[in-house]
Amino acid sequence: MQPKQRIYIDEVGNSDLGSAHDPNHRFLSLTGVILSLNHVREAVHPEMESLKNRYFHSHPDDPVILHRKELIAGHPPFRVLRDPHTREAFDTDLLAVLKRWEYTVVTVVIDKLEHRNQYHVWRHDPYHYCLKVMLERYVFFLKQLNCCGDALAESRNGKEDRRLKDAFSRLWEQGTEYVSADQFQTVLTSRQLKVKPKQNNISGLQLADLLAHPSRREILLEARKIEDNRTDIFGDKVTKILMEKYYKGSGKKIYGRKLLP
Image 1 (tube, rainbow, N blue to C red):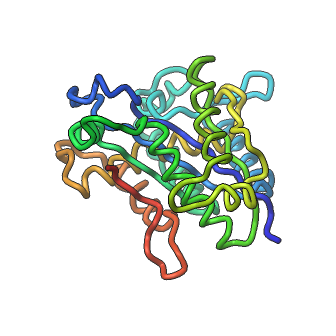
Image 2 (cartoon, rainbow, N blue to C red):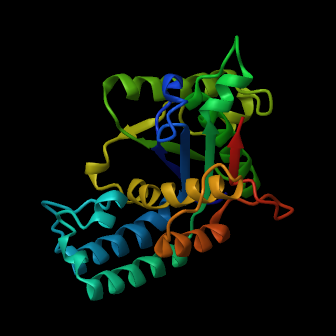
Image 3 (tube, rainbow, N blue to C red):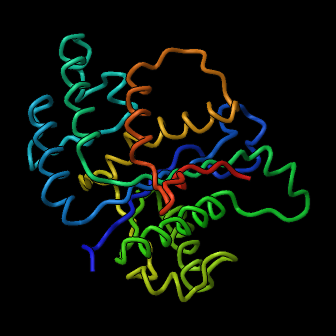
């Protein structure tokens, strides 16, 4: 039996169908980063802490939490990244660990506008729909490795957290048209989704945050849902790494990217 796995889930966008016509809120994506808990303990967490201490003087009593938007903007505590030389050095070191760490990525994106147009009477909840597709792939991944695992998502607030947990529990109890409840229950070690704030300094959630937007952008660009009207050199480098990290089936077909509906 392989070491226990955990999928760390990050959300970009919102599930509100009422905002589907707004170009800034048309898409919702969930990105799951699957990691062996042994690898988190032995490599990802200590190396991430070393990186944060080297550049941002992170301290165990007041840890710096990596957040993509703040890193890009150079907001405190990342103000040092406004210096071009420091930015270049940090980007190089970050890309090196993103490439070296052993993890598997599954990103599911939903076009809420098309979802509304396609289902005039009955509609999936967009978040539940994305979570269902992601967890189906997670179950296939665990079965492929002959191992078990659980799931951890970033906490939002009381109401949102309850929604996430309820969606997870329904899938565990009822299964889907492609994965039976028995299959979920065989490989998932808990019927409960773990929900914790990123401020708890959970390295897996921080890694998911760093990868979620580039992964979503890559999927939408490939589907020609958005225009590549800006140069994102660093994001393009992350995308190249992601192409090696997406979940692949036994035939090497990529199952780690999915656009809905």
